Structure formats: structure tokens, C-alpha cells
Picture 1 (cartoon, rainbow, N blue to C red):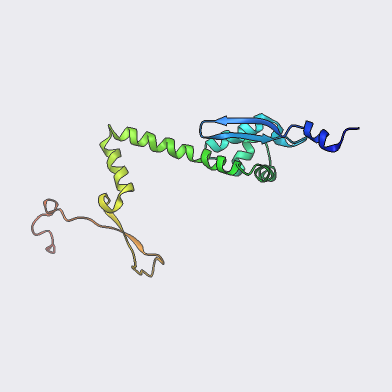
Picture 2 (cartoon, rainbow, N blue to C red):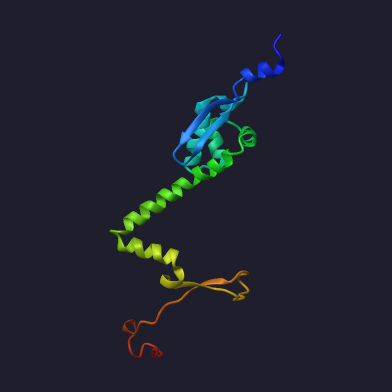
Length: 160
């Protein structure tokens, strides 16, 4: 009879490997009855995270429960980093799209600057250390710059 170690050495430790351009090859551990032995389910999970799905949505896509996902993450510690990397892809794609479109769309470029560099390009400013009884953490106010061409002389007089 073979020794237990010899028998265990015959059992594979890796079921399959997933290769993506965004991270190192991911080795899915072999397990006798685990859901992740179904490569299609694992790939559906990866696809869901690629679209920035929540854990609940990703589980629904893959046909697994939250508990099964948690156990998979426990058994495959490197998966958390991969999940995080996959979830950033939509933001990166959107950012590239916006930046490329700004080359031909001045309005989009200005909107980007207002959001990205609001202290320099936005007319709305945050007032810090301002205590307003209506708001606990300060207020956002609109600052309208004075444009003399928009005001007529005598417009401040009371009408008779």
C-alpha cells in the first residue's frame, strides 16, 4: 500500500490558470467539490468585476452565493488584488475616453477643468470653517462674478 504522502502528491494542486493582461497569471486551486472547479463560473465572476459589479451582482452573474465568494477569497488570497484591479477598468476606460474627446470638444475640456481644478476654474467654491445652523459641515455657495455689461444704470432704484 502506498504511503499517504505519495498518494497526496498525485493530486493536482492547481485546477487551471487564468491569464489576463492586467495581472499575473492566477492559479485556481484544485478542490474536489468546490464551485470554482467550473472554470466558466470563475470567468463569469471575473467578467462581472471587469464591469465594476458589486459582490452581490458578481455572485448573481456567476451563479454562486456570497458565502461561496467569501470562501473562494479566503482560499485564493491573491484574488482580492485581482478583483480590485478589474473593478478599476471602467474608470480607466472612461477617463481615457474623456481625455481623448477633450481634444475636439472645448466644452468638455472646460467641464473637466471645473471638476478637476475647481479652485482655479469653477465659480462654485467650498467655504471651510463656516458654521451655518442649516449645515453641520459647511456650505457650498455660488459666487457670481460682477459683470458691469449686464447691469443698467439706475436698475437699483425703486420703481414708483
